[in-house]
Length: 226
Image (cartoon, rainbow, N blue to C red; front, side, top):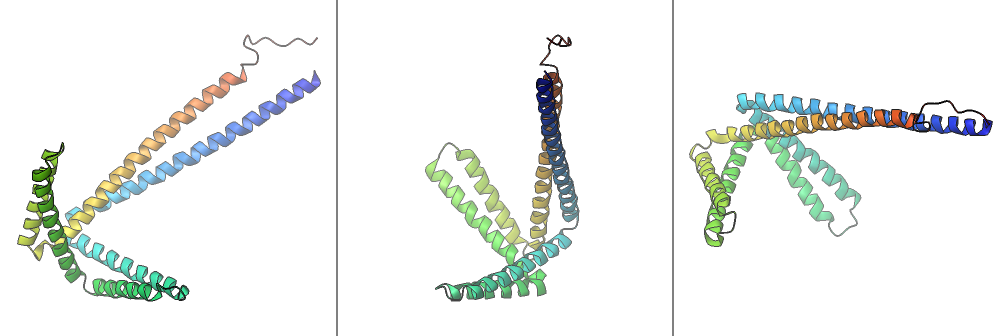
């Protein structure tokens, strides 16, 4: 009888330790989703500010792009030097040098870089719109209407950007701000949804543990020794 009581006590202690670990894991998960939602709020605020000040957002995005090119080129050059015995050594050096040069140009002339990227984006919108329009008219698939509408929208957007170039360079900042806004909204939704699901899991674990603690003696009567 004493051995059975000791085994029951050990099993109960093991169960309590397991429940404590589960609760700690759920708490860490809830905190992680909270930080994710907080980051989403910061991105949403940054996106809204960028939409109000598109000029500042354009310059900021260009500077970030330039530094990314510069850092990426430096890292690529370092890898190329480390792998200088490989047959792609000179190709890695050339690509890294081009990235470094482009990064320096973008950082030193962010407005000119914004104008060039705006022209490039407008040409992409134009060519993409033309291809979508022609493809939707030729194929006429089940998504004919949506493809035709998307192609027309891309075409009109490309023409509008080209018509107001180079003053349309602030389109880059607007697109960058919209990307921040929608990414932030997605993170906020993920964070709050994850916290809600983790809270539901935590609420389900606690009643189950209470039920299981009394499942060995459903009637609640004390066990009489033999």
